[in-house]
Image 1 (cartoon, one colour):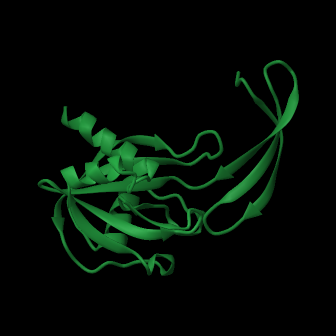
Image 2: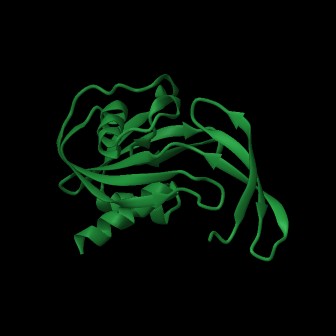
Length: 178
């Protein structure tokens, strides 16, 4: 039995990337309340690795009002669910123009489990071939660059890379390499 029981649900907002719902709940002690949940489709995050170099993308993140460096990542359009491996290859090609000869699953991440149902698979991309990117309209301001692993780690320590999924994904890479 779940520690929190959903008694009712209603969608309060929807667009092409997410829905927001409000659930009426009963807690284990019997008290009632509400829970707001952001539902988004599963995402894929890709760590493009070429020797000691990592390929990152930088884009303006509207909710933060800042440009941020991060690993290529995203969801399928129109709330669609795709096979995670296919989604990873698509996101890599779309955002960077890179095509991977090898995509290895590194693990699963939960974005913000206290408010969102979204989960994502992390992939390591190697044997990379460069080509033209195929960005969506929302990604038109995106830039890409290669960083050495030591430069990536310096940017994280200095608070210049703050994307939680990218930092957690790098942690999965480090654990795999142990």
